[in-house]
Length: 109
Image (tube, rainbow, N blue to C red; front, side):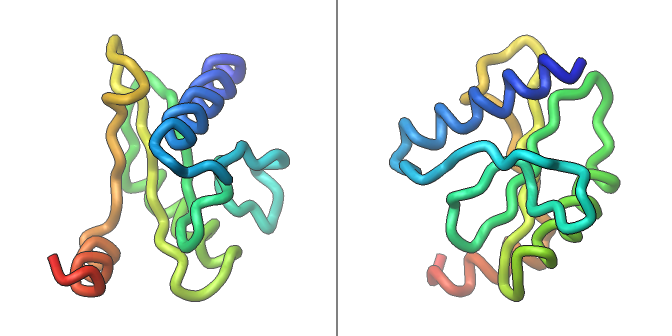
């Protein structure tokens, strides 16, 4: 399973780069006490990538919130979750409502 997760992380980075996030790259050393997520290089975001058979949105959101806190104040935690049988571009991006509200209030949308 680890190989599938790593492959999905690489695919997520590829998609992000194709959409202009040229600094996106995999973060190595996940699981360490000061984990900062699976993908770095998106200013203001901590990104956790999940490629698992069953969804655990609450657990994943809690995990990435801890990782965002390790990065610093104001960092938005997001989860990219693989959508079974679909290309990486169709993956889900999960964000807490409070973070979504903060983001959208700052952009005026």
